[in-house]
Length: 267
Image (cartoon, rainbow, N blue to C red):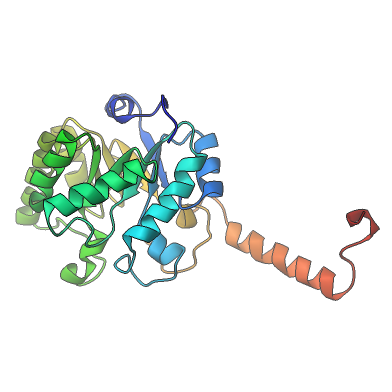
């Protein structure tokens, strides 16, 4: 952890209504360094690494040890951004005591600046307790991937008025409990804008429209590195997967043909 970084709980919160917040996931030293140098203020070590890095079909198999490992790598690289570590499935859904200890490990052992937890009303007291014990928390509502089995798949949430009202209340309660920001994932754009206007903390949208205070994208989606199913809310800013394939093919061909290495590559 780098002390006295410009991006903190206070400076992130101060962006609300002033400037949109860009957030991106990162899972290793190299990606985190590039994101930090690009001026990204908020870096999320997402449990999405289960799919993008570890090859699982969901986030559910990801462990505490794996998340700590990747968070350490990201934290070593970052000098400016605030680093948020995703708490993996079953690391906080049991007892509050266990959740508090696990959250503290991300700050104490892995150098994170904050943790992220999924869920609404059921998480309010946990968020309150973490905040009271000096652990900044980013809350997460809407499509919460760790609940994918309960949702019956990756589906838009908050489409009925009853569901929308529940999300509005959960958002207010989580903000009042001390969350410093709130991820809103895959909910109707108008609902996301309404929630954003009704709470004092920044909202970070993903598939929630432009009315949020900020946006987050997965590293591999943004850069065209992940060729799985692409959600409609993803915008690819590069096609690095294609470029990497081209480079590797060129390397293989030159080695096979004896064109690499040449004398200039030797001693």
